[in-house]
Amino acid sequence: MKIKETIIVEGRDDTAAIKRSVDALTIETHGYGIRQETWELIARAEAGTGIIVFTDPDHAGEQIRKRITERFPSAGQAFLDRDAAEKNGDIGIENADPESIREALRKAHVTQIEGEDSITADMMFRWGLSGREGSGERRKELGKLLGIGNCNSRTFLRRLNSFGIGAEEVEEALRKI
Image (cartoon, one colour):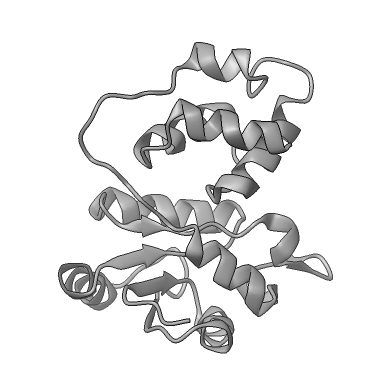
């Protein structure tokens, strides 16, 4: 599987896991303290091939993702399920098997900058994705099916709308849970 976009990852172990899974170029942030040269490299890649942000499904990875998407709001985003990324208590893309990485990249989403939100907080509540017992587990399963990761209800709602995922797609996925 060849990926035309450049994949932004945290470190060299992530790059190795990506290379074992797909044919793609990567840029490593080397953690949260992204250097100016790396920002410039990401900007060139974004203007050329486009970029996909693919960080670890942990707090540090989410913070790095947030920093990158603030500068590059139209970046594609791939999410790896936390269970697929965990090995002996360590969480990271480098721990995932190649098929899980390929699946996450197949489900990568591009942020839609303009447009009206189609999913509301009321809909999230009606679907049992917020404010109810078991909402977190439903979001986790739905996030896995839609390829948008696991997060709190506010971030989940933002991701649904940012990625242009409509009510019909959510309801179809919920029927599979």
